[in-house]
Structures are given as structure tokens and as C-alpha cells.
Image (cartoon, rainbow, N blue to C red; front, side):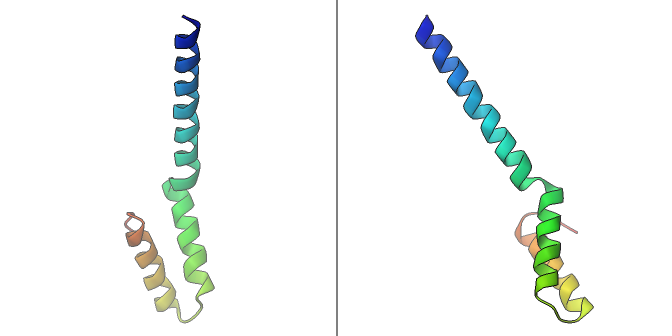
Length: 64
């Protein structure tokens, strides 16, 4: 009985930690900030930055 409780607690912990990691790393607002920084770091004209931003969003599965 004690082993089952340990397995349930370990499984729950792994699921919670995995969900938290996913939420903080892959949420859309975080991806948008990363793409803004990516486009801004490349420099160039405004149109080029906007195209880089859209490219970055599309490559990560988000649309503008």
C-alpha cells in the first residue's frame, strides 16, 4: 500500500512539474517576446524587422 502512495505522489509531481515547465517556456506571450527580441537584434529597416517577427512566430506555430 505504501508503494502505491509513493508511485501516485511521484507521478503527480512529474505531471505538475512538466505542466509548469510547459506553461512558463512555451506560452504564447513568452514566444512573442522572444520573437520581438530576435527581430530587434537583427537590425535593419522596419519592414525587415516585421518580416523577421512574422517568420519567428510562424516557425514556432503562432500566427501574427
